Length: 265
Image (cartoon, rainbow, N blue to C red; front, side):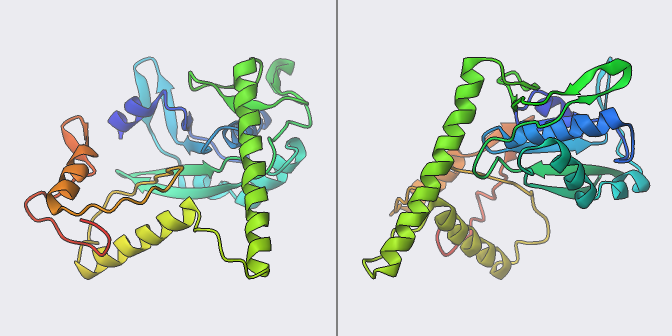
């Protein structure tokens, strides 16, 4: 766990919070709402992991207590978010047990239609401004949650909004074509990947490969179907996709006992 923290400390998609309860200080809750807005305004969203302390020697995985974990009620978080956010961020709260410690993991999705703007000031101890009305918070290239001040950061947020509008327009066109019997558009990348993922999961169950696993979240942007005729070529593509993390291959594959799946290897 400590190695994982060290490797991801500067990740654009992950932020750490010291052990806390949701009913803690007003400033702590406001900072968490700021992080929700920040990740919602960042491509692919991100994660907030509560239970990590930062010390002079680095990050320490201390976890949270049962009471602290139970205090993170999505309804309470959503109620406060509506006070400060122009649009309620889409998020999910998970309680995760790992290596004897309990953590709270908050997964935040990128905004659905329009960037989320802070609608109200919030002050912390010493009248410090934690949230500023009219501000768009986002994640910078150096993995910091901050106000959008540069033209580059603002352009990234605007590009996301334009893409969202384009996706919505495409869905409307697809609906019109379908209703007029003019044929259907090909499945979206999301649908295509979901179909392949479902097929792979069925094959894992049939092959008895469900006893232990890595939980991985992958968000590719565009589905490109390519038929590989040779098993050797497919195995080589699998090996080329492997990443070495401190001596461990990820994803780990049994190269000597490969199993043919419905749509792959």
